[in-house]
Image (cartoon, rainbow, N blue to C red; front, side, top):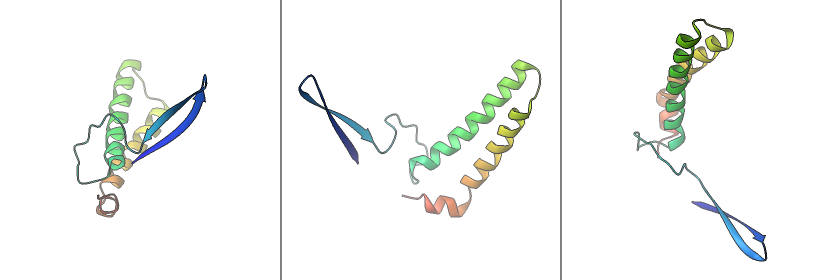
Length: 89
């Protein structure tokens, strides 16, 4: 589904189109809504980012621990059967 917004620039009508899903799709779970897949991707990306940052900085801070402890439950909650059923296409 597309959403169009129109505006006038220099006397001509221009349209901006917004999509309901990302234009660039890396979607391995085709049976569920794309936002569910992207929540899994973001959680794994966050874990990898924090691990690389911890190795680079040679230390662990409060925010790194907080975000790591946030990413792990995010994956588990997204993988719950009730959540998967809710986001099923």
